Amino acid sequence: MSSESEYGLSTLRPEPEIPAPSLDYRPPRPHHYRPLIGLIGAGGISEFHLKACRALGLEVAVICNRTLETARQRRDAFYPDAEICSDHRRVLERSDIQVVDITTHPEERFDLIADSLRAGKHVLSQKPFVTDLDRGAELVALADSQKRLLAVNQNGRWAPHFAWLAAAARAGILGEPGTVDFVLHFDHTWTAGTPFEQLHHLVLYDFGIHWFDMALQLVPGREPERVYASAVRAPWQTTKPPFLAQAVIDFPGAQVRLLCNAHTRYGQEDCTVVAGSLGTARASGPGLNEQKVMLWTEAGVARPSLEGDWFSNGFQGAMGELILAIEENRQPSHSAAANLRSLALCFAALQSADAGVPVKPGSQRRLPPLRRELKIPS
Image (tube, rainbow, N blue to C red; front, side, top):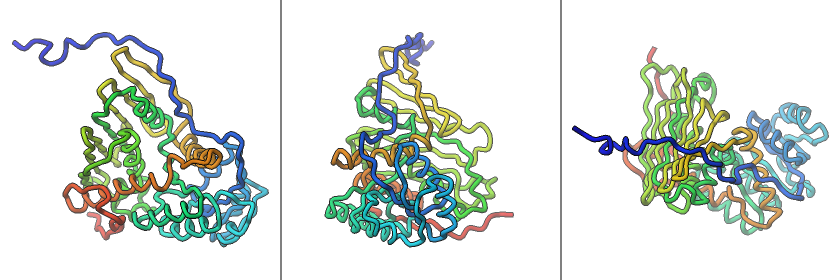
């Protein structure tokens, strides 16, 4: 007869509750520097950029959008004294604007970022800041030559649960990383009939780019060696993109697994588990804004109480870290140079899903085609 110890059952025992380690997970905030900001692009996502600026006590002095009425609506809702315009050159010619926040579509960003840097502005770009790694490197070099900072709005890094897990990993609380598991059961059917539905790799790209970025944050100091990904359609789907997707990322001595079901209509859950040689941390909840974190170590189990949510903390963190980096004369943690690693990982995953073979990050230099014709069974 098998003994309990053969199955590890003898190790199960009550775990003492211990205080949670004090970790700096909150969005960074500038100390004294309060530059004037120009916003280029007043579409849907700009609402969260403007809310973040207002929460940080920053002034947006000009709002630019090709459709002037959209810029006017954003101005009236957030910064009634701001100037509005439809030509981004008006933003750049204002000598009092020191930081430009670019929230347009990816296809337009390269020229807008380049123009802003040449005009002597620091830049925060919505993600992804480029769809070509080599062109991204050009922008990084341009920012360096202009002695200006270029950062990318990877706002997920400052979501409370992700920020706390990453801080624990950097502090060595979990020891050597072994595995990181992202298991996402969420409902993305709201994209039906929207432009998002035309993106074949909606899940792995537009949504998953946050998780590829976090993979690098949760396995610090190691470079990914290869990624294998796939994406398939559920038989009951009526939306076009494949809503079932997975990616496995191999690091030296560690592995990150991403599992997505974007067609979970009932019982949604978002769970992240980081297991290392000295401890395990888990964040879970019904969605991105409702997450509880637990930490297990030899000493016992800790339950940190976190404040904030994905959108508030995330967008404040992205802008706050850039402003603080300018103030402290250093590169921001979400610099474009650092973000090229995340893009390389994402592009490799998309290529792997298309080709059905593992791909080395960095070997796929451009974003693979995202739009495909797909007939939906009636």
